Amino acid sequence: MAKILLVEDNEMNRDMLSRRLERRGYQVVMAEDGEQGIASARAESPDLILMDMSLPVIDGWTATRQIKSDPATGTIPIIALTAHAMSGDREKALEAGCDDYDSKPVDFTRLLEKIESLLQQPGS
Image 1: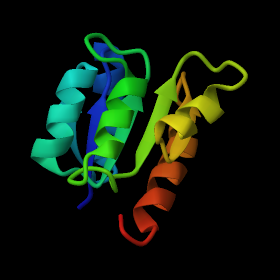
Image 2 (image 1 turned 120 degrees about the vertical axis):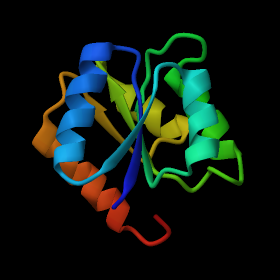
Image 3 (image 1 turned 90 degrees about the vertical axis):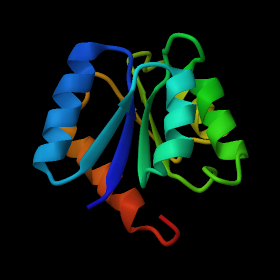
């Protein structure tokens, strides 16, 4: 069973995504801000991280850079989740170190395909 770290400050989004992922057989660990996300990535060693980009304390861009620069967590695939689907956001997320990008509101079927694709890659 793959472990997914969901870093999301919105309680409704956390609840909806975690329940749907758990129904699909994933173990879900949650963090409410970027600082907790970094700490949870180190402590939990998740197989994949879903990272909201607009987070309190430390934003998702900075949290992703820190996770990716740490040898202990740098290989964990990260999917950026953002409601700010502006031109250039995908590129910005990839530059920050995210492995993929998805916009909110989340299309769960599309997100699940991205999760499964990243989990199947060697090294994941």
